[in-house]
Image (cartoon, rainbow, N blue to C red):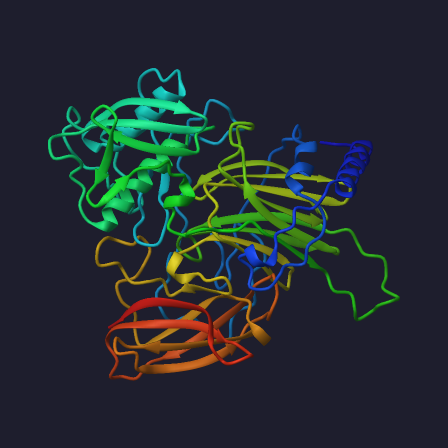
Amino acid sequence: MTNERDDEILGRALSRAIETLDAEETPYETSRMAVQAKRRGTPFWRVAALAASIVLAGALGSTLVDRPATNGTAGQQPTPSVAPTGPSAATTTPAPTPTASAQPNAIDHQRLYFYRGDGLPPTSQHWNATGAQATPEDRIRARLDALNNSRSGVSPANGAGNAFPLADPNTLKVSSVKIDSGTATVDFALPPGGWPTRGAAMTLALQQQLVYTTTEEPGVDRLVVTENGGARTTIDQLVWDKPLARDDVSGYGAVKNETVTEEQSRAACAPNCPSPVPARLSNNWSVDTFAFGVARFVVQVDSGDWQEFTVSGGMAVDVKTPYSSKYKITLEVGGTETKPGLEIVDRSPLRSIRSISGGGKTIYNLAVDDGRPWRVALLTNPDRIIVDIGGFARSISDTVVVYHPAPITAQDGPVLGSQPSIGRQFTVSGLSRTFEATTQWRVVDAARRVLASGFTTASRGTSAVWGTYQISVQLPATVSGNVTLEVYWGSPRDGSVVGLVQVPLTIR
């Protein structure tokens, strides 16, 4: 525990860093925000580094948008006026997989990645390694060979899949691994005829597994695969001719770094507002609980005034600290965390959470698998700052996100967490940041005929911070089979469709 003198010294250090460091601006043209976020402050990864020696035990949980969390105690959003009627994307959060890290304050790198299906990056699970693995090359070789179930006997858990061909381990194995400037070149010994993997979906799934599993090694960011002594490899129709990083195969496309800032409004009493009461904060998290493929981090304001918060993201150097991964999201909030410290999560995509309090502020660093899209929302009663990470790629645009319902199972491969069909009455929920908070929707059939349509008002409008929405859909009794749910908003200039999200569904 720190005493008051420690807090004062740390607070002064944080304040000096904030005052002296330049902000890293993201131009509007390159931002993935629909509206330029208000920018202020400093690159907080530098600020966090000032207090890198403070590691205490953390206490974490979870929160949901539309139903109670399973692993936290934070207050929830008020019950919506229309109760959901469709199936949930997920109802429980599986227990974290035990890790075998040699360091108690380090994430578990002894992990294999398995595919989840169309529109989601792979997920990881711990592997009980055998044999000596003294070098990075040895560790990469062992992990990749372990993907071959015929060699290791490892099977993916929780419904994930393994795209690695279950071939004779003597004819499909890693023959060499070389690392140069963060790029690993892995040569596979292949049977006659090359890779037996077929189909676009399974080829991408295999590529994801190879890239993510290889780059789990700290300091290794990219992978090139060759075959049979260095020849350029081809997996079905895919020619692997350049180094690939996780973000190249995640399925989300390019994601720009950004900064989101929000101030607590005190306009009702201005200019004679009372002195703010310092906030007491608590945090919790969930993965795959309220929406499949989404990690949610929540900072709840238990008492007092949080004044303002800032959230930013960027690539991380995972070789520097044992609790880091490839990407980092930093949240700074006015207030003091009840139980600051480090929590190792190791639930893809969230790997660890580190919180540092001092000088009336708390900095939360979230270590994440990759640079997938993230969003910030603000819920009330009590105030909760929400950071949502990931989700189905087809259900996300820069201004609209659909969490429920999830897309139907893909034709060319399973989509873990999605439902095969839903009824004619269902609820649509998610986040949006649209003009005047108006979020429109429609359901169309294969011929683009509109079967039902409407609009709703989200909790926030045009803003860097997202608002929540919920829609009750009732389709005619004659509707069945494949349809598409479209959620979007209309341009105030010409009424054109903006932020369109298309979610394929099957109506039973």
